[in-house]
Length: 297
Image (cartoon, rainbow, N blue to C red; front, side, top):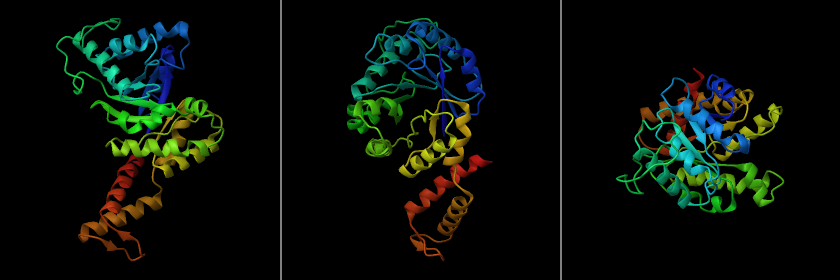
C-alpha cells in the first residue's frame, strides 16, 4: 500500500526509510542521484542488497533504459539476495522490458553469489526470453505518451512483470498538461491495463508537495475512486496519510461484513434488507475490502 523512495547515494536516508513503516522501500538510482554520484549509489545499493535482511522488501529504480548506466546496474543487482524488485523508468514498450530481462539473466549466469561490483556477465545457457527464471520481479513505470498507449503490452511483456505505474511528473511535461483533468485518461488506462493483465491495482504516483497534507489526502481519495491502491511517497510524513486514505472506513468494513455474511448463508444473487443487490462481483469486492481492513489490526 505504501512505497517510499530513498536516494541510493545516501545510505543513512535509506536506513531510516527501512524503519519508517513503509510496505516497500524504493532505493532510487535515477532522479534523486546527481550524475557524479551514480557510481557510488550503485556501489552502496549493491552492498545493502548483498545479503538477505529483515524489514520491508527493497526495490531499486534504475536509470533510463536507453542510457549508459541501466545495463550495468541490472547486471550488478539482479542476482543479489536482498533485491525484491527492479523498477524500470520510462518504459515505452514491451521491448524495453525484454531488454531488462535479458540483462538480468546475464547477471544470473554469473551465479547469485556474484560480487556486488561485477558489472558484466555472460548469458550462456540462460533460459529463453519467455521465461521468468533468473529475472527478479519487474515494475514498469509509464512516463510517456507511447508508454500509456502500450500499457497492456508492457504489463504482459514478460512473466516477471509484477506491476505497472505512472510517472506523472514526466508525463505532465510530455503531454503539456497543466491540470488534473488531462491525467484522468492516463490514470484510468493504467488501472485498466494492470487489471486486464492480472496484476495488482497500481499505486498512485508521488504527491510532490510534502508540506501539503490536506492536498495529499484529497488526491489519495480521488486516486482510490479511480481504482488505484496505495501510493508512492517521497517522505515518511506522507505514509500515514496515504494508508489512512486507502484503508476502508468502519462503515465500509461493516457493509462488507454484511455482504459476505449474507453470501455465506445463501447461494446466488440476493438483495439485502436495505435494498443492496449482491452478486458474485459484489461479494468479491467485499472480500477485498475486508482483506484491506485487517491492516488496521
